[in-house]
Image (cartoon, rainbow, N blue to C red; front, side, top):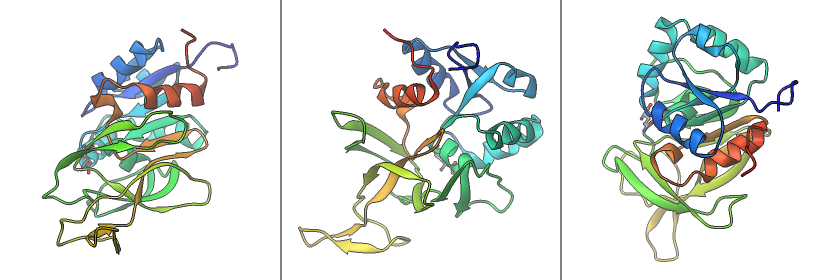
Length: 224
Ligand code: GLN
């Protein structure tokens, strides 16, 4: 809730990627959501979502649109944020396998590795046991990053144990019960204070429960 008691307006950063899908998910849940493209669009916005897409492109466009600095200031001031896939990369403290010129906000104390599940495995789906949800969440991963380090402030809400099919596997491998080598499970949904990040794309499926978790975190949930 805001000081006035009204639920905050959610601004979805819409420079590139799946922004319209986030707006639609928030609106399905009865929340107020708008697209944000310019610094002026941040006026009145009390929480933001950063969509999936391409973090290097978004980083570049955040610079050219003039949005990077005002958004960084608002995040440093404690504005809640939800980042999915590329959006998670942008909110992280450290990006591994990033482009040297790509920037991130450092809003959540995690290190993420881009395209960590490997180039051969461009996309996959997994049923995630998710803290706070009674039933598993069917998550869609597309050239997804994973979380390789978490700070002490960070709570892991879901993990995945991707089977290693990769030669360039960067994480340590563990032997599974079937004798195959698996990556140790890696966090794919994390929360720290008012920041929620996912490696996957809740905006690309009809299941709005992760968006609902964010709305509840920020007091923007509308009783239905
Ligand atoms: N690999 C992309 C990046 O680095 C993220 C992919 C996605 O958002 N689906 O930004």
